[in-house]
Length: 228
Image (tube, rainbow, N blue to C red):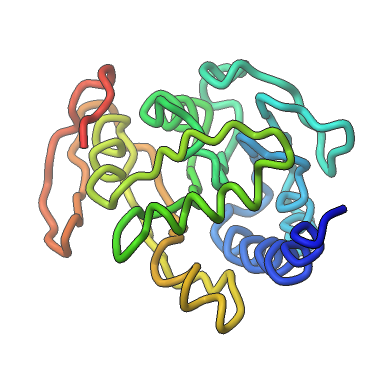
């Protein structure tokens, strides 16, 4: 194990798991069945269950690790191998920026969830946002062989994808405190977001709060990737 691995584990990983587990546990329905998409070793799901033993988790990932904290099956990264509405909730923790087709991934998460979709990811806005996010991504994932396309989205990109997949935003939280001071001044600063979403009925209006304004808009047909 390298010095970088040790420092990352002590300063970042454990705190990140605890903070995310607390935040996600508070937003999941009672006695929910939860699909953790891109779950890795399932450590965050296990930490959530410690806080919420009423929940049951299953995981899917394109790279199934030898040892996992929850049951995990492999999938192709495109189509989830479950019927529509198979779970009460779906979680995607730092997963969307690893795909070239975020709209497809979000559509699949919405399809298999009966109630809520929770996303923890990034917002590529602010001074040196993309280089900072790339550094964090490389440190946290490169040693595990995780694919790193660095496909980060702006707030406008996120809302465009939500409209096109029929998802509506319940909450948008960038105050996650994943890093301790002074690291938070560099690696925090609004680059991380936790988004709580619900699936909207097909063709219904979606509330769009980009740039602080609220308007009603009809979702675009699901299909082509958003450009932005």
